[in-house]
Image 1 (cartoon, rainbow, N blue to C red):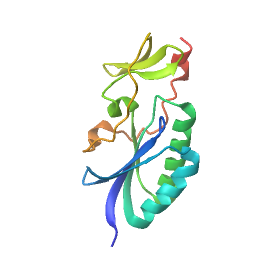
Image 2: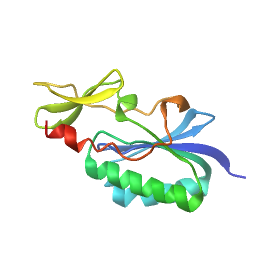
Image 3: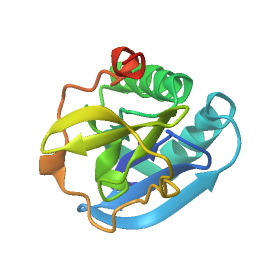
Image 4: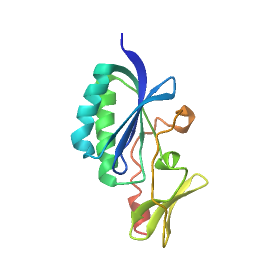
Length: 154
């Protein structure tokens, strides 16, 4: 019998990161520098052979529009086809609320619960981390991507 797990995907920047969680605790992590559109089907095929997927989680933005779109379409399709619930939260959960590059000197920042853009002359390198323990309360079934395109033009 396969172990029941939840899967978390962070595909906002390279490398993409995937965490395997059992009872909300991280038991395996996977990283890849490859394009998410190429590697996600391979990784998830392996995961489905090794585990029984219970829930899918992902960072729905802000970040690379294309990476967010690929992650959402892939996970939403898997969710529908395999009847696995899909949950999302913003990227700030995975980088301790640090600024996230938008375009030029504009960066996304989270102030209280609102995501805005701010011009920053220098910003720290964005490092997204898989949490050791997944806090399910931070995620929502509102899993559509946060593209934030309107904010970039400001």
